[in-house]
Length: 306
Image (cartoon, rainbow, N blue to C red; front, side):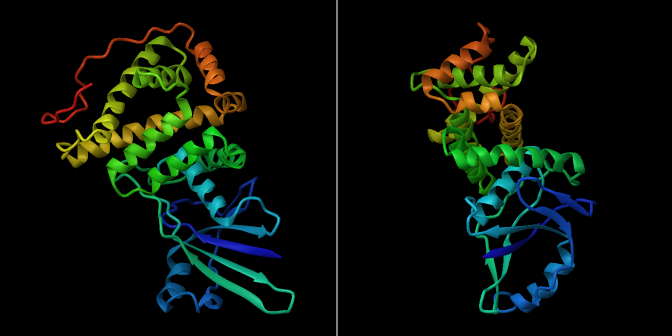
């Protein structure tokens, strides 16, 4: 049995007509008739969805599909988040199918968790270049999703951060995703190892590596303060959201680097020992700069320690 899935994209600001996603589905500009879903929707929803939501993600789901509808939605949202910070949300999706006995089936399924965005740090407009990147990322993310190895955990943690309405929870989820991607040892010195691996994975020039190393180290201390109960004085909302956005930028850069190279994906899915050897090669005796004990990212009243 084939099920047609139609997903309204809230806050999806694009000026195109249709965009084909190679791995699954397409983004369309349409005014669907939702009257057949009236048993699952309120009257205002039936009237308002076609009127206010211009773009819809559409694909056919068959029984032999390995990915569920929800998995495809998650992969789409992750791909869009990695490509660019937007306000796009998915709150509901519609399923319709023709049964063998002649009775068509229609259902609407609501999503309890929506993508959140950081105010002041999103793009107002989505263009075709972003959608091309989304298309590329969907392909690699689907492979990671199906393989269910080390990077799969990073995807799930990243998704949890996207859904979080609390900056602290989002920061912890994003930092945990970064650890799932980069870590290869249980020994002490985690911050230094992660910062070094991040810098050498995402940058090629030593001066840029130094900047990346310093920025990662500064932001990762915020994660430590939250985890160890030292963030009670982080009460400047704008300051906190800026730091959250800065860490999101780092995480996006890691994913963008990984998803652009199949070889890196293969290496990061391997054992700790093999992963350590991979980073030893790309770090190539890189010597990171010294970091001052106190980060300029910390609020003046913070009791944060390194």
